[in-house]
Length: 161
Image (cartoon, rainbow, N blue to C red; front, side, top):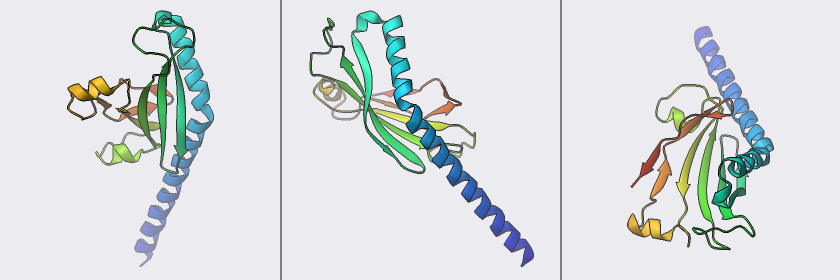
């Protein structure tokens, strides 16, 4: 009886710590998201100014264990851009599982602690439609969930169909 009670207490305590950790990392992501997008835009301007695109995010929804948002790549106003017309955008669906043990990683029995696990999928819109046509309606680009360790992303694995 006593061992069962101790085991149940340990399981409950671990559940509380895991839930609190997931909530905390989700809150950190929410607080730093606009700063990270600003840094990405600064890096785009510095390393590829001829691209003429900028990054933004929309539809951010935070939960306890995961968040969902869309990253939007759009042309910079007034920039000469040959691959994106004014008003067009490339949209990426981002599903983020919060750490310290993201659910997306636990499903694959990956028990490495991390801040988050991110899965990216290209959205079918007017700018991406030719890619979806080539892939016969399937998402032509999606990522295998990538671990984010202390805000330093691991190399992203892409699946191109």
